[in-house]
Image (cartoon, rainbow, N blue to C red; front, side, top):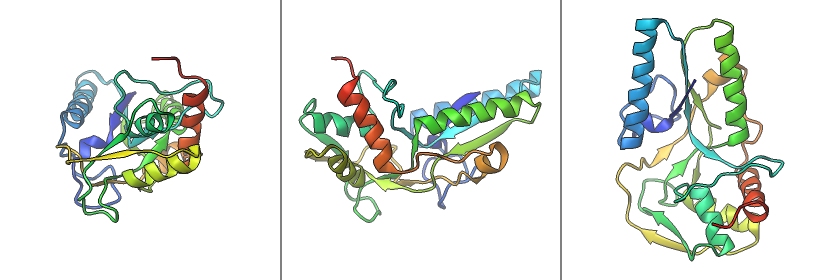
Length: 215
């Protein structure tokens, strides 16, 4: 079982992104994920080791019960950084690029709840346990939200203002990444239970507000 990434696709020619979309990563992160996918194929050819590569889109949210959440040091993911700004842990959140070919000029991403990712792992393990063949499978909601929309939704969820800092684009950031996860539904019987961005942010907000250790 491998946690791969939509970053393996790079800048797709068409949207939404299917598993047949060409994999042309534009970042070291996407490149290394693609290298592991190819290693898994080689391991299967050489040793018969079957695998499932789950290509996550943007993981988001926290345990709905509030027991488990996301914390990186340093933090790099957008939603936690926006929540930090709302909490006053950071003075502002940086928005990298406001001139992309999107409705508001900021990047668009497909956010998928961590609980839905977990259920997809269980379904994929069951797939392999039944002796079924190796697969590469997208995991997303099929709807994209811009960075600006994430900021606005966070303000709505928290009831607090979020200061932003406009910065130049970062190398390796595609303008839009949105999933077609029909294969996950067809093969694994998987559909996301928490596709709503407001709910994803609300679950993360509950954890950061109530459970996050002091760092």
